[in-house]
Image (cartoon, rainbow, N blue to C red; front, side, top):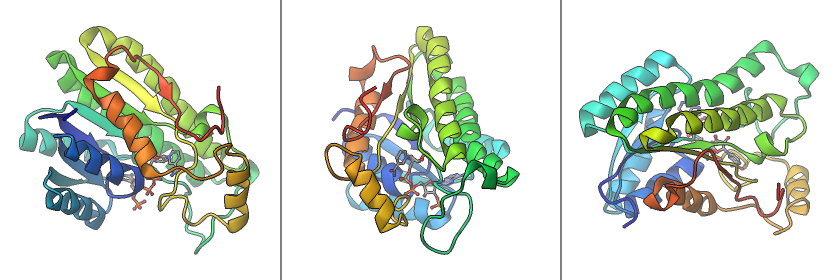
Amino acid sequence: MRLKDKIVLVTGGGSGLGREMGLLFASEGATVGVNDVRPESAQNVATEITRAGGVARPFVADVSNSAAVKKMFAEFLAAFGTIDVLVNNAGIGRTRETGGEVELLGTIDLTDDDWHKMIATHLDATFYCTREALKVMIPKGAGHIINQGSIAGTAGLPFVSNYCAAKAGIIGFTKSVALEVAKFGVVVNAIAPGFIDTPMTAPMTAEAREWVISNTPIGRFGEPRDIAAAALYLASDDAKFMIGQVISPNGGWTTA
Ligand code: NAP
């Protein structure tokens, strides 16, 4: 059991990569707070974890809202008393409902709302949750924070400049905070996944999927487990010497 008795909060834990992390972490002995913006998503995953023999509880909040994050942390700490691991994972792949397949938006087509919503959901949320977690972790002298980046933030991707900016921002934020809090025993790192099969990538067109597969040396999308396994490592005591690092399970998309 690599996370025995650890108290974990996974944002965006009601779907895709967050759901997989919650299930894996709970199977390794953690108590899991499942955050999501939609109550049914958070509840469903918390129920799934409980049915599998784990301990979990839903925490509904829009993590791009500072007041909502403060309230969620107050509820979380009232319920569990502390936080050992924070995974800043909540995210969106697009800012507009286009009624099905993903529409490519060039930078000149982005509205102010497209820009701000993407930055808020990823970067503001990562800051808000990290700030609250550090208020507990620094005095305690221990903690792990894992931020969800992307190859979009390391290598860049065309037609998603707002998403790439948010993810690159998360990586810069990760490195700075990691250097700042390492001396307090708080370990901060990021993951930069390649393309993974989740509800976020499901609406991609057949043509876009083919483009991804042909640019991924392993020849396929990754599975949520590939990312959850990296997160489990970063959440565990084995990662104590990892400070401000970016681990990129990406099937070979980039080796940089
Ligand atoms: P997903 O299946 O859509 O899960 C993301 C979850 O976050 C959803 O339940 C979503 O709710 C929730 N969420 C969105 N905005 C939120 C907010 N403001 N507050 C709380 N929860 C919110 O996507 P995923 O593929 O698992 O992605 C998880 C993370 O990995 C994201 O940060 C994403 O950018 C990153 N990532 C994904 C891939 C990939 O290929 N899948 C690759 C690299 C990085 P709704 O469903 O209601 O929006």
